[in-house]
Length: 538
Image (cartoon, rainbow, N blue to C red; front, top):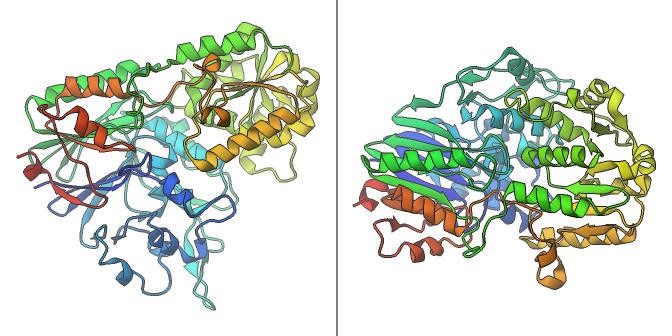
């Protein structure tokens, strides 16, 4: 009978890893990085030692001890599994048939540790998510933890046994299957190219439609609304039981109808099969908060930008392409130029291969590309600058024409402000996530120091003196990627699952409290606990 184990995302937001098993066949739902747990031990200049491969990730409980699942070239050159075999989270998968990883979307807290999996384990996701994952990796530092789409094989040095990249070896690409009926030649060309000198042992993207059979698992993929395009949810049928996984979703964004269609499909399935719902609960603490929609963000942002003389800096976070499209529309309305970074341009270009509704940079007369001054320019940057050479602007251009521009920067781009020299009274509009941990709170302190040094007016920033909340008069500049509590209750009431397992939440007990006495039973999982679904369903 089907068994399920939640290996990450238990009483925490992010790090989702769920294992579904049926008679020796194994399927994973997401395989992400727990940034909160990682932040307990590591930070920007203290990282797991790549030269020892899996060791630090296993020892610090960043990866679950799943023997037989991980890349052999990341195995330390000494026996190490013995120390983990007695842990309650240990599973021996050496004889299992690992069918693949169903990846809900491209955020690294759901996808990042795919980098550690054996090369032959297939990843199944939406076409847009696959392209975003590759674009993110192409434009990132070659960190072995984040080599999701392709990786550099490692080998042990003869003198020390430490692991180092194989000199001259091609990068190796993982098998990706996409929930799509067709993949264009342009997509395949992008997929088989990496912006580095070394070659790539590539594999074509394989389209599989929106439903498929993997071993004993019948799988359906559903697009849902989230703060990154391409997000999806899954419905599996196995052993006479239906298992649904929400991934991250909301009902107040531009693709809300997709989330509603997912809910309606689950309700239909629950009437013919016992249904287990693996449900995210990021915002169940927002019991009485109405969600801010993306259109509300646009209206609030416009109200602050209309009264600004000087430069406008819009910080809406990386990979939020829906928000980028909103600021592109606002720039047109205000008669300003939208200035984006090379990373933004690269991501939009590649995502447009799957989603032509995104702004076409080559046809947008009011989009400029910021040419960041630095000594070392990566190949992907060189090619992006070359494609858009007629729209490049540097720091001095932004300084001279700052009252005509909206500059899309984040905290990590602030180092260029001494070159740009924004006029005092210019606006920094923060349209991004909250201060949900101590590390991000420290970033906010530094951010305010930067803004106050240059005399910038800022709105939308969480304030330390307000217990890291946004002043009420500045609220409404960010739309969460997650459904609030009452929307999740509407989902549950419509679906009527027989069993609910909460994950991706710091408050799993909320579900047990709210559903007490209802037809839906709630199981609060322990990390690594093997659940017999038939027994739990009674």
